[in-house]
Length: 287
Ligand code: PDD
Image 1: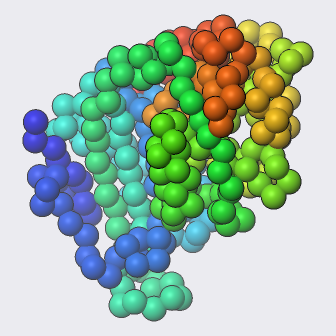
Image 2: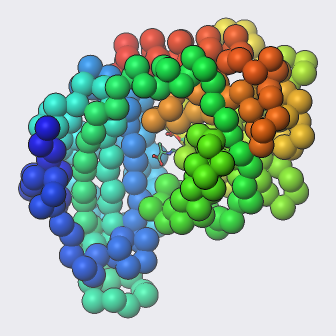
């Protein structure tokens, strides 16, 4: 099926969509991105991702993106033109095109905007969730502003590749103190031996996951106990349950860490319930 990409005001066949060789995203990773999951052709957690996009842009002083309303139209149109019913829509905004020089380009240089969308059937994720997935640990080699969703993802790429080479679905990154920070493209969670949910505090240099926030609200509504506190790899290995959250994986039960089986090696009841609740809510509230 032919795909279409939006680039700076125009829709192009995917294979012919290009940006300039001196785009700052290409040369310096000087840009940010967002990913929304799509249900029935509509975006889940729309406001959360849109607000985080603008926060990332503000933090990096990248200015001149179109209005939220205009951007929403572009996102919807890209989903529509790609006939995505279940899948993902991606936006990347960079500091634009300018002769290669480290300082910011002149005031008024327009940002580059790329939007793509692709199908990702929920049935595929559901099959993984029904079995549970494996994660491995990997050193966290990133910078000090992981709250900004930049396209500078090389440490994340290396961590995910290491996971793939070990037959795992995700890498949980570990800081110098032996504490899990987050996944290479997900937030990491455990349910400890006392039945308390644990995930790292977002003040501690991780991405403020939008799915994480939605799941936190569900945890509260379910009357479950939650502590925003980092956990060690050993604590994770001894956990009753583990899972990770993201716009592309929703809530993904995790059944092994570095080859150690979690719980009874099957997706845990709480992770499974949170996945069901999250998917119901995401679909219902998608716009
Ligand atoms: N990743 N942590 C990191 C490092 C991430 O890159 C992501 C998202 C998350 C989860 O955030 P959210 O729930 O808002 O999707 C946590 C996206 C999906 C990606 O890179 O494709």
